[in-house]
Length: 347
Ligand code: KG4
Ligand code: ZN
Image (tube, rainbow, N blue to C red):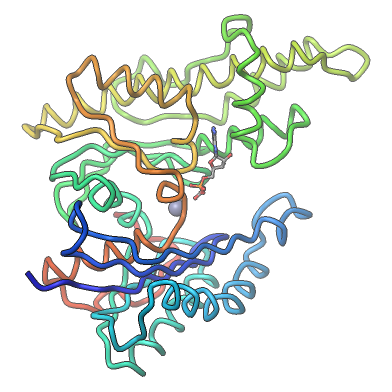
């Protein structure tokens, strides 16, 4: 079979990334020849969040270098490629535009087809790149910006079963860290503290847990956390042990909600007559060991494979964009169809 080699470009949030993926070789049918990710954490640190203007400028400055680096590591030139795939949404529009403009120039100059990729589709198709999953499968996207359940039935066939109605869990972890004077990003910091804590000491809410459906809510958790914190602080100081208990309680609440709603999402998928080949996760929060353990246990009980791609492919990267491009090429979808940069683009 013919191999396909695709350059992927990603710049929709605060990571500038380029990667080269080749399909039709390698054991899982695909091989990541190079994957370069340049973060911007330092640039935004002083502002307490991603500043769109700063992000867009940094993407425009770094993107060419990332692409050169990716091609060099892969030992290839543009002439060796079959196509260029670029994230054309959803995301911060300045960054998306920087990526699309750069991709357009490269593709036109080298006479290559150009494929617009939905960033969320990139995340959702990653388990096929890493684990060769068959359609259909159930996917939980859980990061600082997203939280949703998707039935993945084809490279362009996604059904959203539900998701957060307010904050994403990663955002909740980050806000919790801030309230407890822990460093950012909050997820790893809260997880580390939680190891020494008692998850049962504080009764945090499990929002929407007993409601039918797969929607979730995480914004109420930070209010509960703030109240609990203020209840145990003395003279403005928080004891180490209290902080650990707060972290453990918060993390247990998030894990409970994600596991409970995952069970509902699986049932909802089966109720549609679809047998999942696996349950897969992606996104930075999928790095959390307590959450992973809950989801692993849930899947074991259901006799289902639990698939979590390696962290560098769970978080934002361009290999997933190149791979989604390959999937679209194979599906025969007209390249270029989705090349209008879009800030919003539901799957
Ligand atoms: O996928 P990601 O790198 O970026 C996007 O949000 O798109 O996810 C980052 C988020 C942050 O909110 C971070 O705090 C969270 O993932 N995170 C974690 C852990 N590691 C990262 N949350 C909980 N536990 C972790 N170990
Ligand atoms: Zn993402």
